[in-house]
Image (cartoon, rainbow, N blue to C red; front, side, top):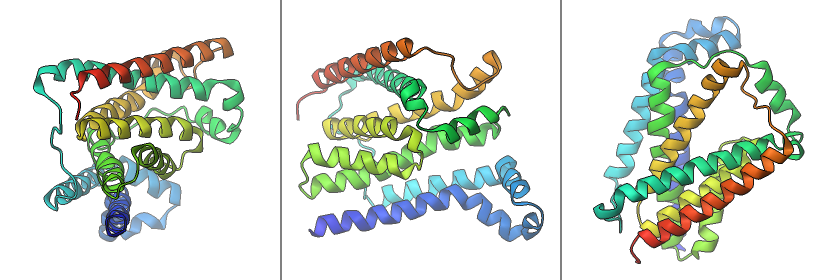
Length: 272
């Protein structure tokens, strides 16, 4: 019970600091330049989004809190039971696992029966034809530091604490994955995020290390962030033109690839 309470308190602190990292630049610039809010809220939001200073402040805050959790030894970036002799093979399998996971999520969302459950979300996506902006700070923040910080929180703090509190892995991993999905506040991506959380959680439990999950998470966010601009450049739209048959075929193949990659990773990583 003591370990569970400790886990809840640590995760609550992590969640609070995570929110702070998202709005750190906005908070600081609002204090320095309060006149920003004298115009419309949309103009102020665009100002913070396009501000390089805001982006670097967010980066600094995220890095600071990552270091804090490592210094306090609430989590560790150790290699666990991983061995250098099979690291390149493991990285290759993690890449296959990540790409398959992304394909599953994307084509599930495209599937008409699922797609039509979120008409307002798709209307917003289709109406947004503007290119993504933010420069290097956005990529460093979303593709590098946020994956590390999220893995520290959801897998290192939450899942690791639940396992130390003697929760069965079959309960602790899905529970932490559901919290991970719910935390993103994206109903349309809930199933995909939950599956991703289960994969990252299993990797953490199986290898005793956050490193494999961090690698997958970085790959996932990088592909997700780059896919929109690439599709806009090639097709002029962020929405793919697929058929239900194509969606089902890709989903089945993606699930088969994910299962195969997990089986091979399980065989590659030494037994605990």
